[in-house]
Length: 123
Image 1 (cartoon, one colour):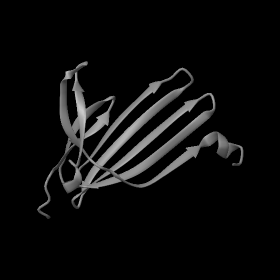
Image 2 (cartoon, helix red, strand yellow):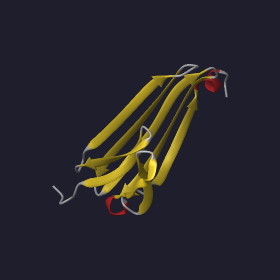
Image 3 (cartoon, rainbow, N blue to C red):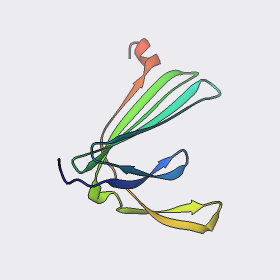
């Protein structure tokens, strides 16, 4: 077993910053879905800590009048870089209640997208 430490960092979830703590080799998945005017939408964020690096997979899926569309993107951030970027988080509705938080600077590994209607048409 390695002497790896926990990873603590802020992410944007459901419109607000949320602090996450991961133990070595732990994964955390957050998911939300809702109906829309024309169908449905969902979002999933999965974070995992392996060998001193936090990996993040963001996926979205949904259906509207044009059909179903899904996308995903993969990111990574070494544990030592989790607090490199500073942002202001508003507390309540007033700038007086603002506090500084540090958020990860994610490196994008790749992305993919799937348009089910286009595939059905042979594109």
